[in-house]
Amino acid sequence: MPRTMSPKQIAASLTELWSPRVIAEVDDSYIKVAKVHGQFTWHSHDNEDELFLVLDGQLRIEMESGTVELNQGEMFVVPKGVRHNPIAEHECLVMLIERKTTLHTGSVVSEKTRSLDEQLRPLR
Amino acid sequence: MPRTMSPKQIAASLTELWSPRVIAEVDDSYIKVAKVHGQFTWHSHDNEDELFLVLDGQLRIEMESGTVELNQGEMFVVPKGVRHNPIAEHECLVMLIERKTTLHTGSVVSEKTRSLDEQLRPLR
Image (cartoon, rainbow over all chains, first blue to last red):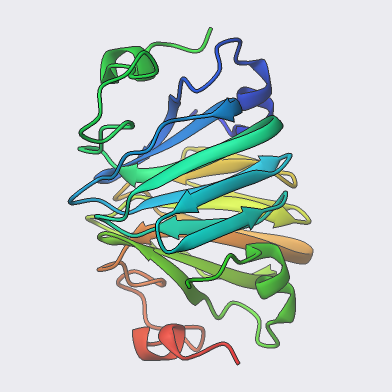
């Protein structure tokens, strides 16, 4: 029997920051969770939208057109092609929904870039 | 500037039960919220997975292979082709993620069936 899961509990259990982990798939999309703190990196996804849902804490997403502030339970979709930079002043747990083809740092490769294999590795 | 949103607040504001409303899109997927209470209807989606995330309350999903119980903050993906029947003993707020092609009552048409136009109509 497939099991239910708590995205927040799984995100809380992660030890590495800014390292998204796939917790489920829905057709062509991955559901991921991450524990974040500090600044990520400016990037964009030319062909994919990206949904951020804050499970705990607060997340700021800087974009060239302005900045959004997400509190716990709030979500925002960064449209495809929009450069963005997520920032968490304090530790924050986030759920992401994005098409399986999405590279989490977009076309930018940095020390924060994680391969899909890393994102897919078993949680326990 | 696109706005942030609280799926839980939007779901709480709905007046009609079992009538999902689209709150966002992520590429080929819709993010929907619904207020549910009582029993839905047995159905399946032959070609689409369906994610349930409980925003408030509790949801039981009966399937032929067994039943899952979801508490607040928990999620479950009903795989494509699996007959299921969501039940909420008390009022429950839920977020759904599913491909845009998904019919919410699957191949079953009942008094609970809502057209996509109804699900897409503006919230305010």
